[in-house]
Length: 346
Image 1: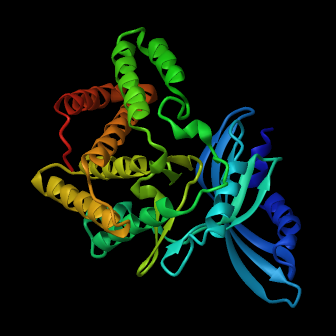
Image 2: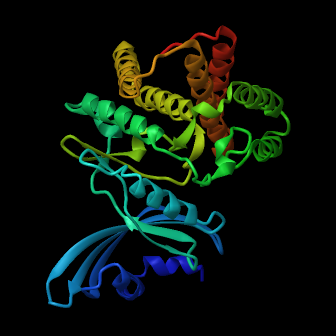
Image 3: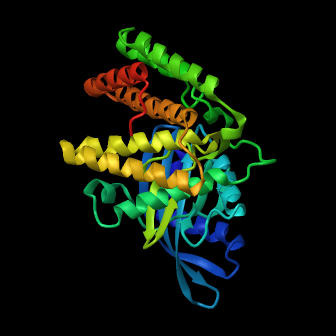
């Protein structure tokens, strides 16, 4: 039996947390009940990639009861110990404050190759933004300020948590792996074009890379990783791709994914108007928070990562299912056109 299945067994989980949490909650007597909610459940014969939420009721030694919400992110082939280190780093640097919420690291398990942390209660802001509901613009503003604060954290003397993820060429699963899978799946039909595009982005990043732009970046900046934790508050989750890289990568990724998530479900001018308003607001607020100007160099870097994010999405469509082929090819055409025109359009 795959060992990760233990974390979906209520009796096992109650005993497991009753033993593990005593270090962090000295007054803990036992975990009296648990509700298990899988957010990601990819389990094969011996391998797995899971994200699991645990709503715990704990009984204290004085017989009082308390509720805890914990999350486990575990991967059989990618140990999540670096995520524990990232969360510890962010708390040490006071990333959590009166506005921003960061999950608190609890412990790392080498047995499950997973990190356990306090979960953030709330929904991601994707639906708010899609529906253009009241408060969605405020959350975009807070998101911009959150990234501005993250990118301003000191990384002096800190080792890169995930150096493989710091450059386009080696971001998991890596360019060579992607091209090999493309050749296998499509028998050489599209991999030459993909190789040419990846070569362009790898070369452009190396040309534009400057040490003064390197900072702590989230690495997977999109609406589903931003959590509405209450009025005037915001949280961020999923730190598996956190690394040291060009801050423009988070900006380009978030701006492109903002467009992608809106256009995906709607058509017509109203959608594109909303998309443009939100993207401009995000970038304006970010620059103001960091007292920066949008010069030509920053425009070029944001555009680089914006277009590269489209390529990552196209790659996902190519490798997911052949029925997504049309969407992938549309994106490739958009990327090629964007590279040729070199226009910076938000």
